[in-house]
Image (cartoon, rainbow, N blue to C red; front, side, top):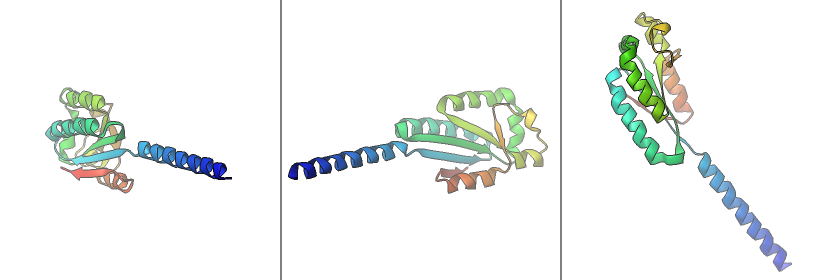
Amino acid sequence: MKKSILIFTALLILFSLTTNAQNNNATKNNYVVLTKKIPQLQPILITAEELKKEDGHHFGDFQVIVCGQTVTGLTEKKEMQKYLDRAKKAGVSIKACGFSLKKFDVKPEEIPSTMEVVDNGILYDFQLQKKGYFSIEL
């Protein structure tokens, strides 16, 4: 009887440790940055690269949303490509605010095709925050 209790306890502890390890591995750090200036993409991407190193396997999703009048600069495809290449390498997605594109008469086809357009950048940012994303606005 004592042997059965000991085996049961050992299995329970092993199961508990395995479950905790799986839960810890499932935890990801997700980030979102709302920016109104294209030149800020450089320090944002540097930050993402450092967080990716620091977080290791806990590094999750990193999104940047470009809003405001600066969306007109997204049409400078050659200039934007250097940011997009670095972002892809770092696991960062750069998105454009559809509301800002409309307000400043920028057509989605005028920006790089690899950029996703979200309807409302501010709303999208809040939705990600509600999902637990770390957020900052620059």
